[in-house]
Length: 146
Image (cartoon, rainbow, N blue to C red; front, top):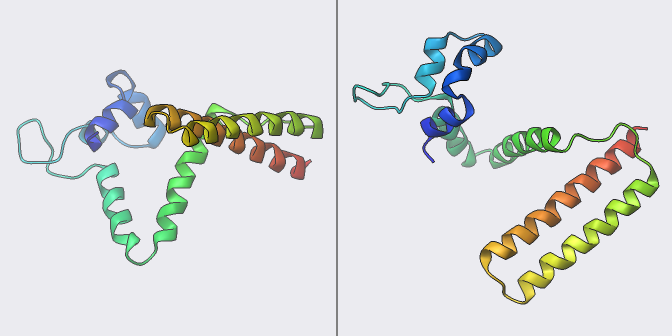
């Protein structure tokens, strides 16, 4: 997906004004972010924020790859926290139940991989196991903070 297409997905037409207010930018800048870079009539001559961040990351891989990994984890964690907000109160019993689910999902992932099922099936099983592991890790963090 091209960066301007991703920006249109992130900022739908009906949300441009709200995003501008939220970010403190003008609506014209937000519209500019949603257009392809180039010289055409419907294009802008400048790169959007995603393109610029991609360039910075590509440059940084040569001397600071760990920073690029941390950046990726930052946005992944933002997404995971939104999709599965950590519970306020977690008990050891809750964690044990979740670890049982982790075990089941990991078993299903290993079985799919070992039986050489389709890439799609293996990807789904591994993603489900990863999601359960991340939830268990969040629960451990909550227990440590209680």
